[in-house]
Length: 350
Ligand code: TXA
Ligand code: MG
Image (cartoon, rainbow, N blue to C red):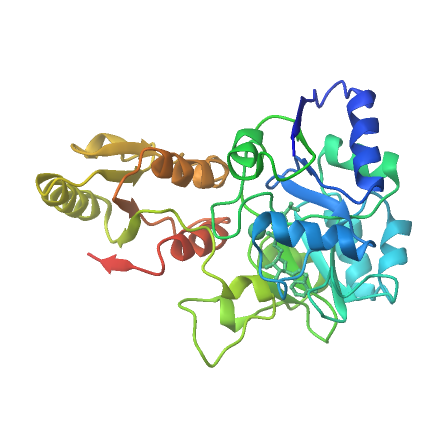
């Protein structure tokens, strides 16, 4: 299949591109589009055959449910059984935005979209292209991240093309995304709201609106066979670069010294080494492919670059990635959740 690639100006949206994307969605085919978090691979959420195509294109396990994207509240009411009070508050505060809410699903939502679950994840993205497409087509759009399963999520249209060119009908290129890591997922179907995946909207921000919030214990730290994550996707080894990736934790100078030493050893053995530093530490490194992932003073620069840095190391075919840790700050938990997964939880304490 030939993938139609269309650049689209967020400030001046070309409605002919939206019209073309709408026809594709109506026919039950796939369009990748930008959101504020990562690019999504969209299809009609209420059409089970269309959802099936998403799983095939991504090579995604069929028990991993999709998020439904909406552009207004009446679309939410179409796909959920009920809107609990807590959900209403969260929607009022954080939508459109990087928050996905898990509800009990309405009957019209096929199990093919929800991975067999009786719940459904819904989000209203804060991106003009996404909102215009959903609004104009009046289709509620099922969209996982538009990457091949197991690869880092796409933060540019080029990343989408690298993975899915020839497998999907269309890519709308709205430029690089703003946040760079996937939405926070919160489950409101039982008692205390529970975070199933950390993201830009953190626990503290949620608690200011709805009181006490829990975090699914299965997503903290190393995967534990006895704990099953409530978001099925969190159990997979996601976001993996091809190289062997280790995170070094400790004081700034000791970490840099250790990374320099290990990098040197690998290079002497003939391996290619990538180093993940920050703007504040990049000058401490002496060998290897040294990349600053962003500024510790401005964490959004880190989340924004995270997946792109991992993809660049794939393209450069590095054998080892040695990275700093980014524990602290408001976004620290979300960033470390992604980095730890990418590193297969290989962490060295210095
Ligand atoms: O930021 C995002 O959320 C992006 C953009 C495109 O919106 N989408 C995204 O989708 O990250 P995906 O498919 O890569 O991740 C969806 C996650 C998976 O971990 C999945 O298991 C979880 O959401 N999920 C979906 N429906 C669920 C449900 N009913 N209950 C629990 N978890 C659910
Ligand atoms: Mg994904």
